[in-house]
Image 1: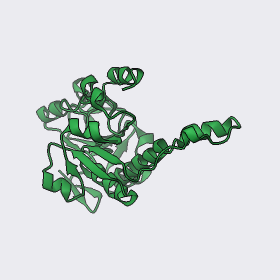
Image 2: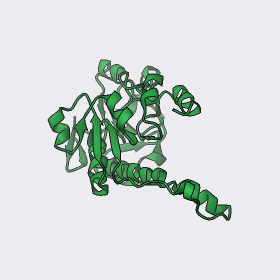
Image 3: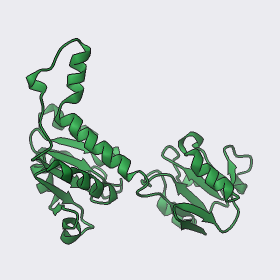
Length: 256
Protein backbone atom coordinates (compact mmCIF):
# COMPACT_ATOMS: atom_id res chain seq x y z
CA UNK A 1 0.00 0.00 0.00
CA UNK A 2 1.22 3.52 -0.74
CA UNK A 3 0.31 6.51 1.39
CA UNK A 4 0.83 10.19 0.62
CA UNK A 5 1.82 12.56 3.42
CA UNK A 6 2.53 16.22 2.67
CA UNK A 7 3.82 15.47 -0.83
CA UNK A 8 6.14 12.69 0.43
CA UNK A 9 5.56 8.98 -0.01
CA UNK A 10 5.55 6.43 2.80
CA UNK A 11 5.70 2.76 1.91
CA UNK A 12 4.26 0.42 4.47
CA UNK A 13 6.40 -2.44 3.16
CA UNK A 14 10.05 -2.35 2.01
CA UNK A 15 10.36 -3.00 -1.69
CA UNK A 16 12.63 -2.81 -4.69
CA UNK A 17 11.96 -0.17 -7.33
CA UNK A 18 13.32 -0.23 -10.87
CA UNK A 19 13.97 3.18 -12.46
CA UNK A 20 14.54 2.73 -16.21
CA UNK A 21 14.78 6.48 -16.86
CA UNK A 22 17.34 7.54 -14.26
CA UNK A 23 18.14 10.90 -15.84
CA UNK A 24 14.42 11.79 -16.09
CA UNK A 25 13.69 11.45 -12.36
CA UNK A 26 14.71 14.29 -10.05
CA UNK A 27 17.48 13.28 -7.61
CA UNK A 28 15.44 14.56 -4.66
CA UNK A 29 12.68 12.08 -5.46
CA UNK A 30 15.18 9.23 -5.56
CA UNK A 31 16.69 10.39 -2.26
CA UNK A 32 13.24 10.38 -0.63
CA UNK A 33 12.79 6.77 -1.68
CA UNK A 34 16.21 5.80 -0.31
CA UNK A 35 15.45 7.45 3.03
CA UNK A 36 12.22 5.46 3.21
CA UNK A 37 14.27 2.27 2.95
CA UNK A 38 13.46 1.54 -0.68
CA UNK A 39 15.98 -0.36 -2.76
CA UNK A 40 16.69 1.43 -6.05
CA UNK A 41 17.66 -0.49 -9.18
CA UNK A 42 18.86 1.05 -12.45
CA UNK A 43 19.84 -2.31 -13.92
CA UNK A 44 17.94 -5.56 -13.50
CA UNK A 45 19.64 -8.81 -12.54
CA UNK A 46 16.44 -10.58 -11.48
CA UNK A 47 13.06 -9.34 -12.75
CA UNK A 48 11.31 -11.30 -9.98
CA UNK A 49 12.82 -8.93 -7.39
CA UNK A 50 11.16 -5.84 -8.85
CA UNK A 51 7.98 -4.81 -7.03
CA UNK A 52 7.57 -1.28 -8.41
CA UNK A 53 8.45 0.80 -11.46
CA UNK A 54 9.23 4.51 -11.31
CA UNK A 55 8.92 5.93 -14.83
CA UNK A 56 8.40 9.18 -16.65
CA UNK A 57 7.53 9.49 -20.35
CA UNK A 58 9.72 7.25 -22.48
CA UNK A 59 9.00 3.85 -20.95
CA UNK A 60 6.02 2.16 -22.63
CA UNK A 61 4.40 -0.16 -20.12
CA UNK A 62 2.33 -2.55 -22.23
CA UNK A 63 1.48 -6.24 -21.82
CA UNK A 64 4.81 -7.42 -23.25
CA UNK A 65 6.73 -5.12 -20.90
CA UNK A 66 4.70 -6.20 -17.86
CA UNK A 67 5.24 -9.88 -18.65
CA UNK A 68 8.86 -9.44 -17.53
CA UNK A 69 7.87 -8.55 -13.95
CA UNK A 70 6.05 -11.44 -12.22
CA UNK A 71 5.80 -9.68 -8.82
CA UNK A 72 5.12 -6.10 -9.87
CA UNK A 73 2.70 -4.29 -7.53
CA UNK A 74 3.04 -0.58 -8.27
CA UNK A 75 3.83 1.79 -11.11
CA UNK A 76 4.78 5.36 -10.20
CA UNK A 77 4.50 7.88 -13.04
CA UNK A 78 6.41 11.14 -12.56
CA UNK A 79 3.94 13.19 -14.56
CA UNK A 80 0.26 13.48 -15.35
CA UNK A 81 -0.44 11.60 -18.59
CA UNK A 82 -0.91 7.83 -18.45
CA UNK A 83 -1.05 7.14 -22.19
CA UNK A 84 2.27 5.25 -22.05
CA UNK A 85 0.79 2.77 -19.55
CA UNK A 86 -1.75 0.05 -20.40
CA UNK A 87 -4.14 0.79 -17.54
CA UNK A 88 -6.49 -2.06 -18.45
CA UNK A 89 -3.68 -4.61 -18.30
CA UNK A 90 -2.54 -3.18 -14.95
CA UNK A 91 -6.05 -3.60 -13.57
CA UNK A 92 -6.14 -7.23 -14.73
CA UNK A 93 -2.87 -7.85 -12.91
CA UNK A 94 -3.94 -5.86 -9.83
CA UNK A 95 -1.05 -3.43 -10.31
CA UNK A 96 -1.74 -0.05 -8.73
CA UNK A 97 -0.81 2.99 -10.85
CA UNK A 98 0.00 6.40 -9.36
CA UNK A 99 0.63 9.63 -11.25
CA UNK A 100 1.42 13.14 -10.01
CA UNK A 101 -1.27 15.53 -11.27
CA UNK A 102 -0.62 19.20 -10.66
CA UNK A 103 3.11 18.81 -10.00
CA UNK A 104 4.07 20.86 -13.06
CA UNK A 105 0.80 22.79 -13.42
CA UNK A 106 2.16 26.26 -12.71
CA UNK A 107 5.18 25.75 -14.96
CA UNK A 108 2.93 24.74 -17.86
CA UNK A 109 0.51 27.61 -17.22
CA UNK A 110 3.36 30.16 -17.26
CA UNK A 111 4.72 28.60 -20.45
CA UNK A 112 1.32 28.85 -22.15
CA UNK A 113 1.01 32.55 -21.32
CA UNK A 114 4.57 33.05 -22.55
CA UNK A 115 3.70 31.39 -25.87
CA UNK A 116 0.62 33.61 -26.20
CA UNK A 117 2.72 36.76 -25.80
CA UNK A 118 5.41 35.45 -28.13
CA UNK A 119 2.92 34.65 -30.90
CA UNK A 120 0.65 37.66 -30.53
CA UNK A 121 3.61 40.07 -30.55
CA UNK A 122 5.55 38.23 -33.28
CA UNK A 123 8.61 38.08 -31.04
CA UNK A 124 10.31 35.21 -32.89
CA UNK A 125 10.03 36.76 -36.40
CA UNK A 126 11.28 40.06 -35.02
CA UNK A 127 14.25 38.33 -33.38
CA UNK A 128 15.08 36.55 -36.62
CA UNK A 129 15.00 39.89 -38.49
CA UNK A 130 17.35 41.43 -35.93
CA UNK A 131 19.80 38.52 -36.31
CA UNK A 132 19.93 39.30 -40.03
CA UNK A 133 20.79 42.93 -39.27
CA UNK A 134 17.30 44.20 -40.04
CA UNK A 135 15.29 46.45 -37.76
CA UNK A 136 11.62 46.30 -36.78
CA UNK A 137 8.87 46.16 -39.38
CA UNK A 138 5.34 47.44 -38.76
CA UNK A 139 4.04 44.31 -40.46
CA UNK A 140 5.36 42.33 -37.48
CA UNK A 141 4.14 44.68 -34.76
CA UNK A 142 1.52 42.21 -33.59
CA UNK A 143 -1.34 42.61 -31.14
CA UNK A 144 -2.00 42.73 -27.42
CA UNK A 145 -3.65 39.94 -25.46
CA UNK A 146 -5.85 42.60 -23.86
CA UNK A 147 -9.35 42.49 -25.31
CA UNK A 148 -8.94 39.06 -26.89
CA UNK A 149 -11.17 36.01 -26.48
CA UNK A 150 -9.33 32.99 -25.12
CA UNK A 151 -10.57 29.41 -25.42
CA UNK A 152 -9.52 26.80 -22.87
CA UNK A 153 -10.19 23.19 -23.91
CA UNK A 154 -9.94 21.10 -20.76
CA UNK A 155 -10.49 23.17 -17.62
CA UNK A 156 -8.67 21.15 -15.00
CA UNK A 157 -5.84 22.36 -12.80
CA UNK A 158 -3.70 23.76 -15.63
CA UNK A 159 -6.64 25.24 -17.54
CA UNK A 160 -7.80 27.07 -14.43
CA UNK A 161 -4.28 28.35 -13.70
CA UNK A 162 -3.92 29.69 -17.24
CA UNK A 163 -7.25 31.46 -16.79
CA UNK A 164 -6.20 32.98 -13.47
CA UNK A 165 -3.03 34.41 -15.01
CA UNK A 166 -4.83 35.73 -18.09
CA UNK A 167 -7.38 37.71 -16.08
CA UNK A 168 -4.61 40.16 -15.24
CA UNK A 169 -4.20 40.83 -18.97
CA UNK A 170 -7.78 42.17 -19.18
CA UNK A 171 -8.86 39.70 -21.84
CA UNK A 172 -12.35 40.14 -23.27
CA UNK A 173 -13.56 36.76 -22.04
CA UNK A 174 -12.42 33.21 -21.44
CA UNK A 175 -14.44 30.42 -23.01
CA UNK A 176 -14.18 26.88 -21.70
CA UNK A 177 -15.02 23.45 -23.02
CA UNK A 178 -15.03 20.63 -20.49
CA UNK A 179 -17.86 18.06 -20.51
CA UNK A 180 -16.99 16.97 -16.98
CA UNK A 181 -17.50 20.35 -15.32
CA UNK A 182 -20.75 22.23 -14.83
CA UNK A 183 -21.50 25.78 -15.94
CA UNK A 184 -21.29 26.97 -12.32
CA UNK A 185 -17.98 25.19 -11.69
CA UNK A 186 -16.47 27.04 -14.65
CA UNK A 187 -18.06 30.38 -13.80
CA UNK A 188 -16.50 30.14 -10.34
CA UNK A 189 -13.18 30.45 -12.18
CA UNK A 190 -14.34 33.20 -14.58
CA UNK A 191 -14.76 30.74 -17.47
CA UNK A 192 -17.85 30.73 -19.67
CA UNK A 193 -18.94 27.18 -20.54
CA UNK A 194 -19.57 26.72 -24.29
CA UNK A 195 -19.59 23.95 -26.87
CA UNK A 196 -16.33 23.04 -28.56
CA UNK A 197 -17.61 24.34 -31.91
CA UNK A 198 -18.48 27.72 -30.39
CA UNK A 199 -15.14 27.91 -28.62
CA UNK A 200 -12.96 27.30 -31.68
CA UNK A 201 -15.01 29.58 -33.91
CA UNK A 202 -14.94 32.47 -31.41
CA UNK A 203 -11.48 32.33 -29.79
CA UNK A 204 -8.47 34.39 -30.82
CA UNK A 205 -6.29 31.86 -29.02
CA UNK A 206 -7.27 28.25 -28.25
CA UNK A 207 -5.21 26.43 -25.61
CA UNK A 208 -5.50 22.65 -25.12
CA UNK A 209 -5.18 21.00 -21.70
CA UNK A 210 -6.38 17.41 -22.12
CA UNK A 211 -5.16 13.90 -21.45
CA UNK A 212 -4.81 11.65 -24.48
CA UNK A 213 -7.63 9.10 -24.34
CA UNK A 214 -9.87 7.32 -26.82
CA UNK A 215 -12.29 10.22 -26.32
CA UNK A 216 -9.76 12.98 -27.04
CA UNK A 217 -7.56 11.38 -29.71
CA UNK A 218 -7.91 13.36 -32.97
CA UNK A 219 -10.43 15.64 -31.24
CA UNK A 220 -9.14 18.39 -33.49
CA UNK A 221 -9.68 16.82 -36.89
CA UNK A 222 -10.50 18.39 -40.24
CA UNK A 223 -14.08 19.22 -39.24
CA UNK A 224 -13.00 21.14 -36.13
CA UNK A 225 -10.06 22.83 -37.85
CA UNK A 226 -12.41 24.19 -40.55
CA UNK A 227 -14.35 25.99 -37.83
CA UNK A 228 -11.39 27.79 -36.28
CA UNK A 229 -11.55 31.56 -36.36
CA UNK A 230 -9.47 32.98 -39.20
CA UNK A 231 -6.10 34.28 -37.99
CA UNK A 232 -6.35 32.68 -34.56
CA UNK A 233 -3.74 30.58 -32.77
CA UNK A 234 -3.71 27.09 -31.27
CA UNK A 235 -1.45 26.16 -28.37
CA UNK A 236 -1.19 22.47 -27.51
CA UNK A 237 0.76 21.66 -24.36
CA UNK A 238 -1.12 18.37 -24.06
CA UNK A 239 -0.35 15.24 -26.07
CA UNK A 240 0.25 15.61 -29.79
CA UNK A 241 -2.38 13.01 -30.70
CA UNK A 242 -5.20 15.35 -29.67
CA UNK A 243 -4.68 17.18 -32.97
CA UNK A 244 -4.72 15.13 -36.16
CA UNK A 245 -1.42 16.33 -37.63
CA UNK A 246 -2.27 15.40 -41.22
CA UNK A 247 -5.48 17.43 -40.98
CA UNK A 248 -3.56 20.28 -39.31
CA UNK A 249 -1.10 20.47 -42.22
CA UNK A 250 -4.05 20.54 -44.62
CA UNK A 251 -5.70 23.34 -42.64
CA UNK A 252 -2.49 25.40 -42.64
CA UNK A 253 -1.85 24.86 -46.35
CA UNK A 254 -5.42 25.87 -47.20
CA UNK A 255 -5.13 29.01 -45.07
CA UNK A 256 -7.91 28.04 -42.68
